[in-house]
Length: 199
Image (cartoon, rainbow, N blue to C red; front, side, top):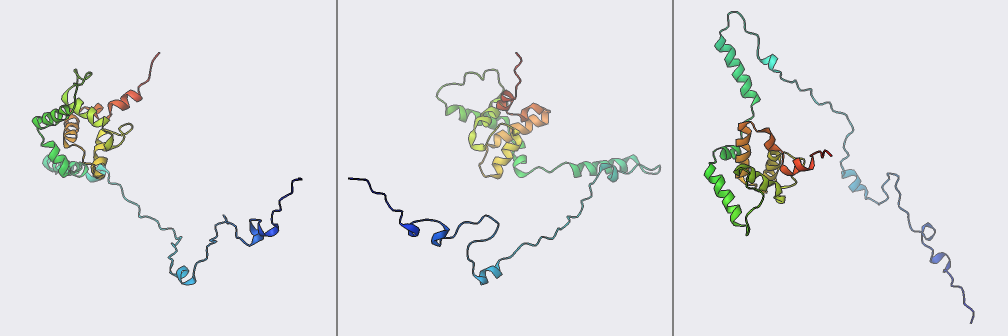
């Protein structure tokens, strides 16, 4: 028996605009029908350009005037202290609480972390307690990525997001900052990844 050709059904089976179906338009026009009462209630943002007021930058030179001949040195020192008070940001409640934390509380925190482990840590013999606490914070992924972000900013971000980062970590960071240790802000993982291999 010879094979017969199937009919496509003519115009009835053909998809597209010939059948009466609309096509999608990408020319920034709304193709969906919207009732007139809804169109009128939609607020259209204005396109007027609003200039923000220029902020005057406060410079230390503007605040501290040159001492005149009749001014006392105490008045000049008082002016300098007033400027220092303006520049130094106030500490939050959490930072004040962390600043009051004792070494015993930090040791207790670290012992509780060590108690969760089955085997002792192998490569941390030469590290201080502060460095151990900070490295543990670095590898705790629930507080976000540690690479590319300073430890203090990472802790503050986790606090803002309600992740309850350990207060002991903030206490260690503040102590190291007061000692003048600027390397403490960079995570150990970040140091490893950014190291340049010399061959």
